[in-house]
Length: 48
Image 1 (cartoon, rainbow, N blue to C red):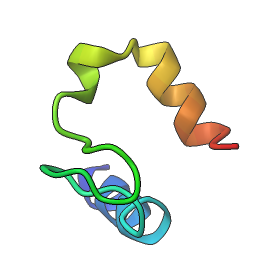
Image 2: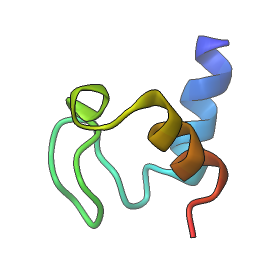
Image 3: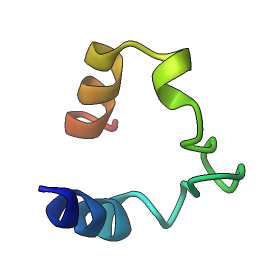
Image 4: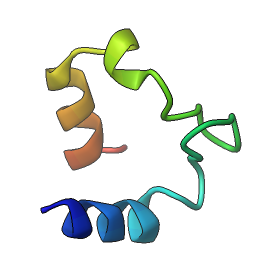
């Protein structure tokens, strides 16, 4: 599952998000402290 998630992040998210710094989108670092699991899942499934 980790390998699948890493590939998904690389293909769908990494063009705008970096793990430890702001890029086009906000950094992913600390996202679980800032947002609920439901919010995170909704943004992954419905990014618009």
